[in-house]
Amino acid sequence: MTELTIAMPKGRIFEEAYQMLIDSGFNLPEEVEMSRKLMIEIPEEKIRFILAKPMDVPVYVEHGVADIGIAGKDTLLELKRNVHELLDLKISQCYIASAGLPNTTMNEIAPRIATKYPNIAMNYYKEIGEQVEIIELNGSIELAPMIGLADRIVDIVSTGRTLKENGLVEYEHITDVSSRLIANPVSYRMKSARIQEIVSRLKKLVN
Image 1 (tube, rainbow, N blue to C red):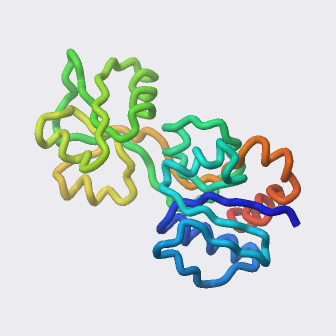
Image 2 (cartoon, rainbow, N blue to C red):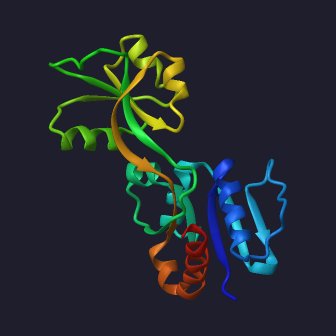
């Protein structure tokens, strides 16, 4: 059996995807102690998991330290890494939207958009013909319209509760997001049978 290294984000996505692998028939321990671990070896299945930050998963896969990985569509659109997208796992579903203070219009001269997704935001506004200034932030994006830093924010929305709590409303639905199975292009050729087996098993669950 070919050895396979899988990069996964820590937290909820790992738990959901790991459970999917168990449900699709892989012989994995039901419980994994992952509080401090960055790598988990499963010798019986010749699988090694690398636990990473969500933004790092496509980087590991592109550079071949992981053969396959699980990454959010938001990360893939933002980073544009050279990886093959194999399957939409339909887990961790949410979407990217623009939001701002209620009943406000964007500044006509130089509207400012605060976001941790500068590429997604820039591409979206370019597509709709809006010239905007992008302000890249890493946390508490909701603050930007409240303190007058930006006209709109572009961010991930799952329930919309955070927006409501901060007195913001949604303006535009930009794109749907869910977790995807991705592969390194070389691994996809060299370990094709093993990777295809995982894809077909997971596909049955997804469908």
